[in-house]
Image (cartoon, rainbow, N blue to C red; front, side):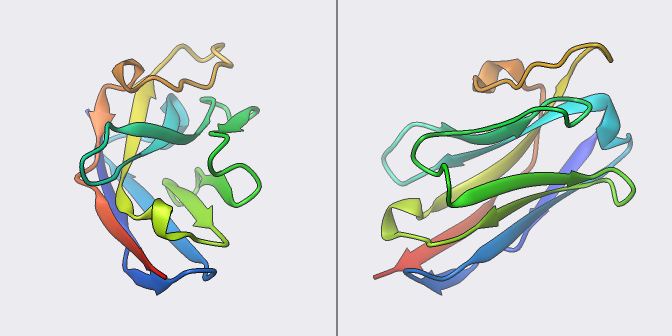
Length: 128
């Protein structure tokens, strides 16, 4: 079992930057592939960025590529989402997720059904 807690969400102006954190307890994040998803009002949950279990691969959605960067600090048991050049369309609740995978698994998972642990979410609001 792993518990995930996101933090860092707040109201920002368009063009600003923000860093979200996802801290785990109950297990070490190095045992999981990790991902960030978001859900905007009235929309489906969508993949934002993910990293493989050992961190060798990362992948970002086209909508955030070049603006958002996922990183993980296994020593701090934390995954980060650095968001830059924020737009009003980035307004959403952002969720951190963990997927149980084999040690040898180098995949980045983009489907929410691949993840079996979720945080409660943190609200990011970008004003124009």
